[in-house]
Amino acid sequence: MSEPDPKVYRFGDMHRTGMLWWINRVALHPRGMALALHYPDDADSDAIRRGEIDPEGWSLIGDGREVFSFGVEADDESFERFSRFVVDAAAENHEAEQVRRDAKANTEVTTRGQGEQLFPPPEKGIDGHG
Image (cartoon, rainbow, N blue to C red; front, side):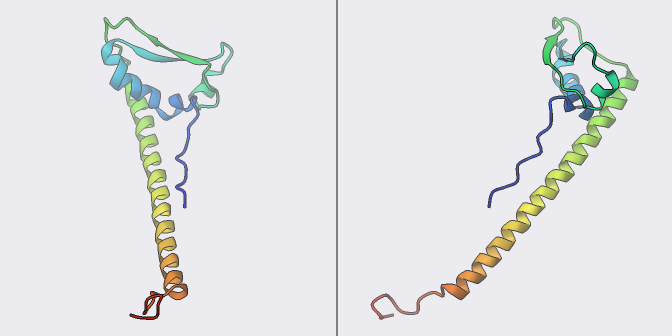
């Protein structure tokens, strides 16, 4: 039995889930850099925040000389969004893992039961001797 594929997110979900904030906040901002997503000029900013529009590309901005930072309010909101995403993703992964375990256990029980019924171990060797 093959394992279910993990959920694959669209690149546009980077903003909606808070993943873009986390990557920037943890990895790039302390180094004076930022990952910037580039959207069409006419893209609606609310649709971008909801993850409905995928970026056309990305770039690294900053020269590494000055740490990037946002206001406390923006960090708090982004942290909450990212935290909810991580908790939800973990729950989905846990459910998927539980489904995999249950399926494997059912397969093993079914196979073992069928094996015992259909192919009992021989009591004697092929030549008829034990």
